[in-house]
Image (cartoon, rainbow, N blue to C red):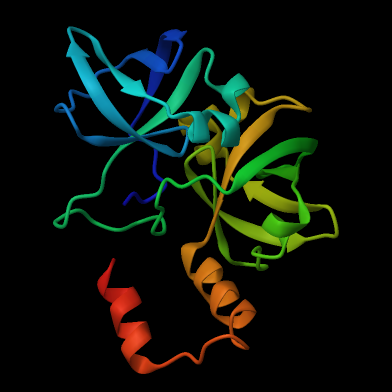
Length: 204
């Protein structure tokens, strides 16, 4: 579990077969979960100045690999004693979006990100979303995209300030929105009981 707040930028040293190697200050332990551009990955090797993580075929097929070529956002897994500032992020990427429009303002910048209908169905105005691992608030939802407004601080402390039109990004929708959609879509097949709710919440 993560919060969607960047701890540092990692530099990609190489990506061979299923192994992604990064330079970073963070020193994980073997088996630790680390969000790399929002995707929860497992540390399999530690070396001086960095670490390596393993990407399954499923992960490679569902993340924006083109955004894992230079600098990436890194966030270690949340600890129980940590402060929760962003929103609860699982590191499970729902799909890939594309930056279709960037509109600077006197304070902040609007980013329009296109996505497929399945992802947009889980987007709620003023709700939370994670883009490349960054916890953000959705301002508007359109038929083919969402609008996000990033304040200058976010642009300075994340890689968003370097993002260009057409760039693909990882999207993770709010997990509670996914749960509600799942319950509603399966309502005809099975009734929702408090026992089921308790069991699902207990898994978190």
